Image (cartoon, rainbow, N blue to C red):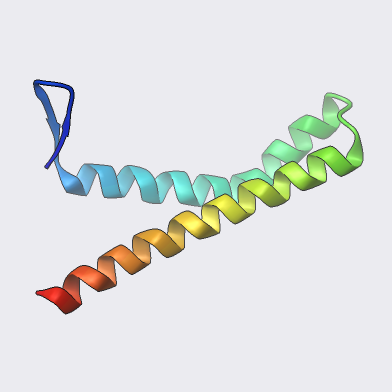
Length: 77
């Protein structure tokens, strides 16, 4: 369990599920919906293209971290 503050304890499964959801949102939602929203707001093309790429990269890195953490814990058991 992860301890947040003095009293709140969150189970590891909940944290992993939230991070997996966040990684999926960044990987698939970043390059599509966030870029579309920024384009409609009039943000310059290069800026929203780089932001979309950054969101995608952050999602992939988070997926890799979660996958590495999951396989690493199985090997050590």
